[in-house]
Image (cartoon, rainbow, N blue to C red; front, side):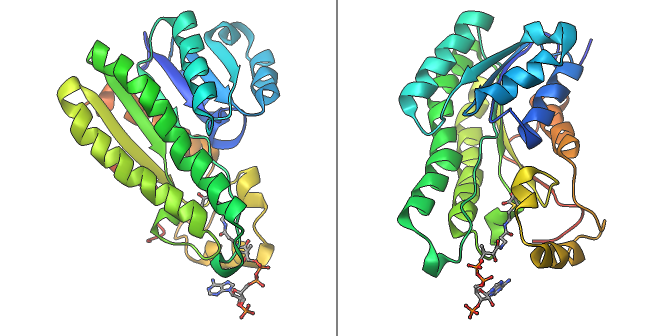
Length: 247
Ligand code: CAA
């Protein structure tokens, strides 16, 4: 019996990086089924092909979370396959880094639409299911950038928005036994971070007491905990996973 036994989840952006690690951790922790909503669904199909027996528990769904119509369809597909949704992880996120005075409108809109409005779309269609069940665990993937990071005005705004969104949904969902929390990863070794210029990575590294980047599976551990009944009295929190770096 894993700590997620009997539970069904939706994870967005689960094709690589932190999302892929979350899906794999959920499987290790005994999840019954997980729908993985991913823009590049081939990434999920590739992951599933290497999972062996557990592959039956994963439903890859092509979905651009910034599209309400696509999210609505995807949530219906997940419910059709698994019957319900107990756990929602809003992980899908993109960056379009630039100094604010050089930032294109498209870069602002794209990041806000995926990172923040995407989570809004998922919650819009999943929370009614959770309210009906009087049970739910929602974990939103924020970032330490929420507290300000040069070159990320759009991303920081989206990730700070997720914190306020989560704290509000936690207050509203509590009476229906729905917990809503955030994790705020610091610098994690993923494709997203590998695009940062080397000299900036060196500056970031000086700020991390553990003197290393985080690993996706270290984020997945926290997400699985917050998604489980081990965290049943934790709601409205933002857990910072930064190797000790202060914000
Ligand atoms: N503070 C203040 N000013 C700074 C600065 C800093 N830390 N870094 C650069 N600047 C200044 C520069 O001195 C320069 O000033 P001038 O124009 O007066 O010369 C100006 O900003 C522009 O700098 P660049 O020439 O380097 O600008 P650029 O357009 O080539 O690059 C950038 C800007 C794209 C933002 C680049 O600096 C960058 O990639 N920064 C990293 C952003 C980052 O940390 N991203 C995290 C990605 S990982 C992630 O997002 C996951 C997560 O959740 C944490």
